[in-house]
Amino acid sequence: MLEHGGGLRKAAAHYNIPLENWLDLSTGINPNGWPVPALSPDIWQRLPEDNDGLETAAAAYYGNPNLLAVAGSQAAIHWLPALLPRAVVACISPIYSEHPQAWQRAGHKMRFLQNATLPRALSVATPYVLLCNPNNPTGDRHPHDVAVDAAHQLKKRGGWLIIDEAFIDPTPEDSLTPLAGTSDAPNLIVLRSLGKFFGLAGARVGFIFAAPDILNRMNEAMGPWTVSGPAREVARLALQDTAWQSAARPRLQAAGERLHQLLAPLGEVKSTALFATLSCAQSAELYDALARQGILTRNVDQQPLLRVGLPGDEAGWLRLADALSAWRTI
Image (tube, rainbow, N blue to C red; front, top):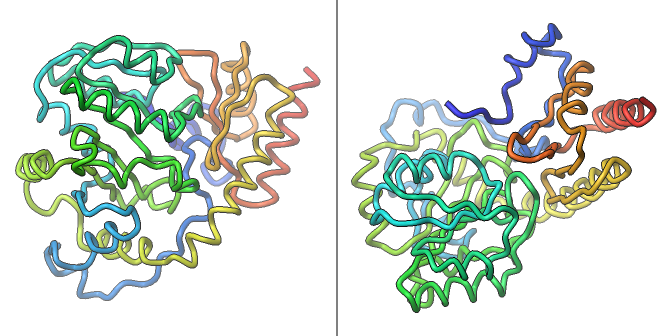
């Protein structure tokens, strides 16, 4: 089992700090997520149904009806590689570690391209190009026009572009989701998640956008009721709440910039609206120093990188600022 952010209980036991005393900045999840309302008791008793309005709400939010609801984008990451012919995958890395593991488990061969651009990945001439945009964990971004061009170039040679857009919701104009599985880009597959921007990671709801054939085969492979009824209802309501979405985006972008500035004195920082990643030779030591003060971050194993999420309130911001200030004086 791979390590991920959010292992708060493990950290609490390791550092002998009570669970309630931690500031968890390890996941990149919006700390002030969509406010979940009380649900009708009936929804806990009925089996999930596909005609409950979730797919319609998702098509409107993402701008594309070529979708399948899954139990978090993690489910699509797990199933997708087994549905495609085995070949070599150009993987822009470092990347969310579940991606290469799933492709390798399905029999594909990985070619890791460290901190590569999309044009560099295309030059390798593999059938598949795999990336996160924005990248998790580095925070790197691939420009929209470059990604569109990559999809078109891969289409000409019979290749596929697979993009994980789990962190793109604060800047929807950068997304390629509206193109996925369309006649313009039938070879483009995009994964989306409600866990990050909406702060609904525990609901385990995501979507895969792809050509109908891939969606049908994935649906058959996964079987019925992959997303629970209550999770489907919460997801539908959140996707329809345009007022909350419009208010959340500028707040998150401002918070992301604040986090960037807070980390900048310690080294090179690349950031999104949901997390910032610090490149620092002492990243492991900084991770440990913060953890000893009850602040959990994400230490990236592949490179000297520390990924830091957003505090949820002013007390959290001040606590992080004080801890970083203390580190700088060591």
